[in-house]
Image 1 (cartoon, rainbow, N blue to C red):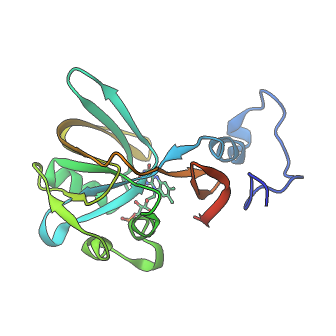
Image 2 (image 1 turned 180 degrees about the vertical axis):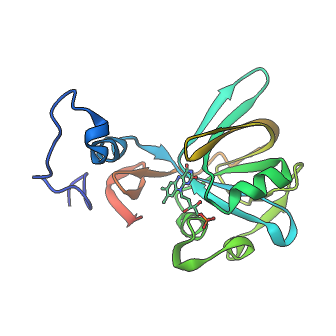
Image 3 (image 1 turned 90 degrees about the vertical axis):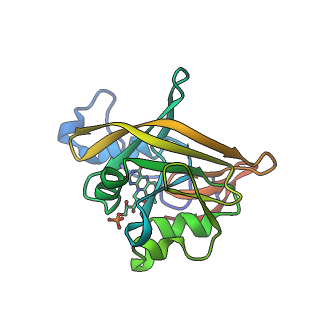
Length: 190
Ligand SMILES: Cc1cc2nc3c(=O)[nH]c(=O)nc-3n(C[C@H](O)[C@H](O)[C@H](O)COP(=O)(O)O)c2cc1C
């Protein structure tokens, strides 16, 4: 098995350098596959309205004040829930939390509060739930949601943090979840 397994055919057509992406949207998708990222689960909503999503579009934003950014597709069930709660929690997943990533993509039709089954959670300052044993739990108050194109850029003011020091992250690269100490080992394709 090579590093680029499972989805890249060696003979996949490559765009010429400088090719117009508008003429070839697939070129953008192919380029994004090279963007390796940490995998987080974003929890939001309250009570029976709880839902959330798996995300790689998480970034730190500013130190003063401590703030984070997450990009959220506005067609997702999480968008109204974030607006209602005015907050969300970023749970950065450890290598042994792949099952949580799968539930929060909605795999198998799992929706809403059912996505929380099979893991342990604690309610945080904003009302969102933090995942026990996540690498880092970053509870955020919604500072601003910038609606652009299909997505909203969520800016979150950090209200509370919890960390687990001794685990490795779950990574996503080239269409598959991976382990940092063995990038060649595909855990599962998404
Ligand atoms: C590896 C991976 C990363 C993802 N990253 C994002 C993301 O950053 N933002 C986003 O809105 N959706 C992202 N998604 C899609 C969501 O996890 C999820 O499928 C979607 O929000 C579910 O919508 P629903 O709640 O309406 O069922 C990602 C999916 C995968 C598999």
